Amino acid sequence: MQNEDDLRGLAKVMEFMRAISILFVIIHIYWFCYEYIRELNFNLSIVDKILLNFNRTAGLFSNVLWTKLFAVVFMGLSCLGTKGVKEEKITWTKISVFGIFGFILFFLNWWVLDLFLPLVANTALYIFSLSLGYICMLIAGLWMSRLLKNRMMDDVFNNENESFMQETRLLENEYSVNLPTRFFYKKKWNKGWINVVNPFRACIVLGTPGSGKSYAVVNNFIKQQIAKGFSQYIYDYKYPDLSTIAYNTLLNNRKSYKVEPKFYVINFDNPAGSHRCNPINPDFMTDISDAYESAYTIMLNLNKTWITKQGDFFVESPIILLAAIIWYLKIYENGKYCTFPHAIEFLNKKYTDIFPILTSYPQLENYLSPFMDAWQAGAADQLQVRP
Image (tube, rainbow, N blue to C red; front, top):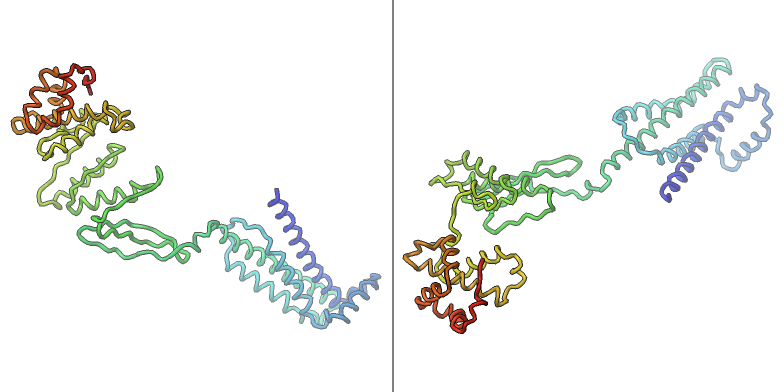
């Protein structure tokens, strides 16, 4: 409400300014066309006295330009409050034509009064040229104000003032990833580049959902790195969006690789459309701690609530037991049976069969000593662990 009241008050001030401007034009006509007005026999003695006093104290009518200048000044002030309106037809050429034409008719028409014509014709021609010139300059002023305000309205967040020159060179090498950009600078859009010349220093992309991270950055990384012979491990959260891009890009860039790579997909949600893999492949484990990490990952993914109970006895015990089984399968016959299904099958055997086998290996005997003590003490119930 306060903004609306302020706008109404501003509009009234602008109307008052324009009224003063028109009043100066009328006073100008009255003074400099006085001979004709006197012949009309109007009783305007009071007006004459007021204007004579003005002229005597301020010299307002000492020159034909003073009243015209005052009229134009107040007219210009009244145009400042004009509302910006989207109008494609308004151009600087039209503003210039109306402004120049109005200026000539308004300021350079003094010679009309000296024409050898009847007094009525001289006066009518002078008033007509003066009025037409005023109207043309008023239109030019209104258009100029609207055009300038439209320019300001196009940049309501002051983006132009906050723009700066960015990188426009394409800096490319055998490892680089180059992202095309557009930026606004010096009242025009420019093309630029974000040059990641050393992607090995690690890159991170942050943004809200739907902000265009994949479209602008991730997709470019996938395409350009495959084109340059990189191998990739892609976590496709919205499968198969990124996988499709990677696969098609690989088909078009096979010649970039000395040894043509293979394309594999692991999809836990759709095993029928997934390649088979062994998450506890013995070739990836060199120490029993690797077996523990595998067991830790498997058990916490099977039991989500355990994530908040890490360190608890009933959480750590089954993880340790599964780690021992995995390491046993790793060392038994060179890992021939080291697969996840074999580990589950072995875990479901009776403890009387499992513990003697596992403790027969010195590297597992100390690892499983707490379980052996509990089993031998008859506390087998607390060892009933099933993933």
